[in-house]
Image (cartoon, rainbow, N blue to C red):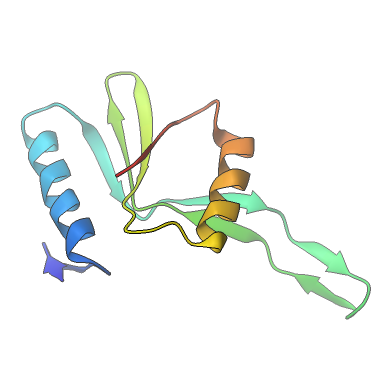
Length: 103
């Protein structure tokens, strides 16, 4: 679904973006960002292949400020095993810095 020139992977995510934009317009949130990236694992050398393994990122759906809190939000229909692993790594690394919401 396309909303505000962005193609979203789901209608639920597009509707949430529209809702967040409305909240930003009335001043309830600020600094809304779509798909912020967070480093969860640094790149490392793989001696088995003789190559560098790339760094791994967690890409959330949205990030915004609500008062003094910085909120990271993910819109989910269901939690895949890969999502659960990346969320775990994100929370280990950044859980003290951000308020995390899953909608």
